[in-house]
Image (cartoon, rainbow, N blue to C red; front, side, top):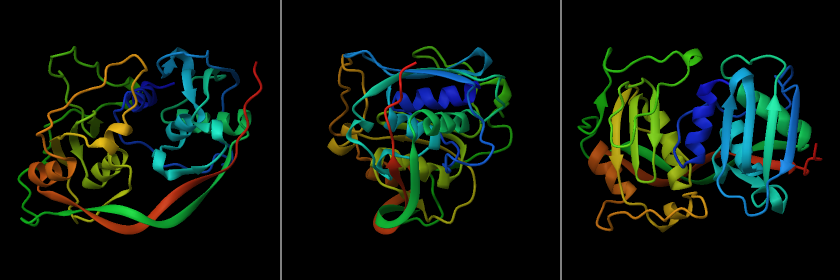
Length: 289
């Protein structure tokens, strides 16, 4: 597995997010696949979840439910997934998968899709439904958005996907490399470098539990920073290990809606719009091996 996919997966598992590929049907022709894979139920009471790439293109998954694997393989948000058996989110799996050769960049999501189709008999279809959404629009100042800093050439470092991500900074230290095109979201913070507002909308969707559509009309790439205090609904979507302490936030801090308006000069408006929904038609528990 290339480190780019490993990093995306780990960030998602930790409650952080970065942009990725759009999802497609698992039965696409000539989809890359693992050569061998071992899948077993996770030990009862096991704590912590991880998906990790290993040298040679191997994939190690620890204690992850099928629903989260679907999210990673197809890059869909939890609220876009509907249907499926009751155990989809309640039962977890350990997986060790190996390809016959090291896959090329961006192949791992497709290989995971093939694994789900082969071993979990996973089938789905997509529908477009009219659902509540948030529209990301310009604030009162129009296209004058002082909270958005347009990224300039040389202000960030282009990262070669084949070389893997830059090292993460130690706690309390600033990163030594500012990669272009990255969004990292924590429980109550967001940092973006050279990202479009369409990509920002995609990331906000996960925190808000609803599709966000960019209607600003701005097409540039921006550096952005947001800080807010999560509400109860956002806190319910934070996934923590069972023994981890619950994070605390400043109760007087702004909501994410206020933060978007005051810190970026944008606004989130509640509307209805088309949402692509991932409808699960069939899934089976895999035979152990």
